[in-house]
Length: 423
Image (tube, rainbow, N blue to C red; front, top):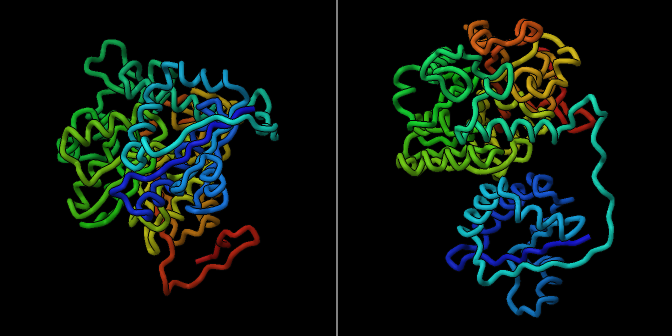
């Protein structure tokens, strides 16, 4: 067993508070999220500046100056670590980590070293063979959307169904997920002005609605986009909140984040940023967002509960979610739920309506509305969904609010969630 220790010191122009916000809410969750992709057993981070772990590391290194943060990554062997270093498919992820760290960490004044460690319990083994475990689902979703971002494939080329549909081989100008992207955007509810206002390459034809259209965004607001992709909805949100506002996009696919950042840089979107991370563990501080949007991404997550708990955490009191997603009318058959192609194609992961309502209540949300999009049937049929699934799901608009001071306090159940109440 080996452990890599990263003892970080902040760049001199940063305050402790600025570095701490980065280290606690961005760097740590980012590494925690990708620990398994790095073939690591786990990632542990010391958030306390001047804490006992920090002081012990400083003493062991003979350093008079305290470290601003300490991170520890565990591997089974040095060979597992070298696999990460040598794997070409990890290049984009490594580059994004280095780019993020260089903005906050003074690498010349920091230290990285290995230690040998005793054994500790390994992670829980995966589920039964016929049931994809959560990491398998995430890996498949990441692989397919990485290929879309890079232009190497479309969802149609890697599966029989998708968040856009299948294209006839002779149809010209087909893009990202098997259909012409502008045409699909119109089906999803985007206007000609919306399509014209976004950078080239941001519209990949993905989604099941237009969350910005139902978000009622205001000038100066902070918006968080869950599963931002190449930035299409984030850029529309940026137009709505204006230069005095702020938009943060989060996506777990390095290729998508790189594409979105390049789109923002080329087109002068200085109040839009894109962060690498999973939406079940958002690299965002508490109470920062006025509105959260998302477009056909939450259904891709194996467990929706942490997604909505995280959304609740990062919203300001009174903040709102405006989500376009696929919702099931009933429990989906096992052969559908366990189909990886359908899981990563926006269908098999759809949560039944009654269950989703309960999840939102337990997360603490109020004023919950889940309604079919007006042209839901057209949206679902545009994907050419298999018959066994298409009539069991609908394209939904999901609205809810985090209670504000002065609201009636909802009753809490024993597990900490809000108890549903009849209205």
